[in-house]
Length: 209
Image: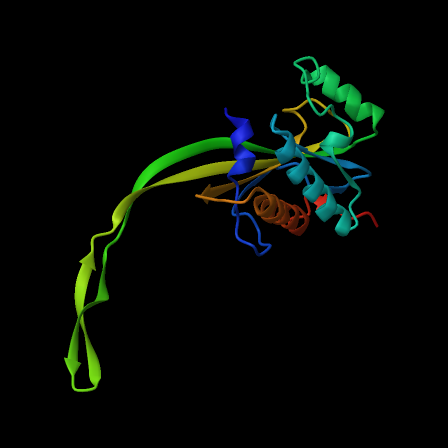
């Protein structure tokens, strides 16, 4: 899985709205958390910073205590750092009880025909006395084949209050497909806005009373 490429290509629409594809663990009814870490699963440092900091900011803005993963995990994570027992130790040391992760899970490439169309162009000039008349004709633009890339991105929320093991702690997943995105900064803001909106709307993460 080429995770570093994810954050250079993500882009969602600018409005905050709910992500369509979601799954919630049947027994999970939502909870308030004392501290949530937002972690982007990639070795791309710029991407980690963009997605983690924006995700944490959006949660804090909604009165949810959250921190960026880079504030507690090493910037350059070794294989030892990535081991489950190492991650659990960091989680325990920093009293984290919830984690929101983001990762690329699939990417697809396709050839799409950009359809042709009729266009009007200026063809000749004619002179009549003191006037110049322009003549136009309609020509057909045949269009072209263009390559599009579609990326499937997944956000996962982990309830770490009782079981901190990766698979056992998963209580919510949300997926989104994006085609030919552009800006990293805009992508981070838009994607995390949708994730946070969906998680709060569906009470995956609840505000403390």
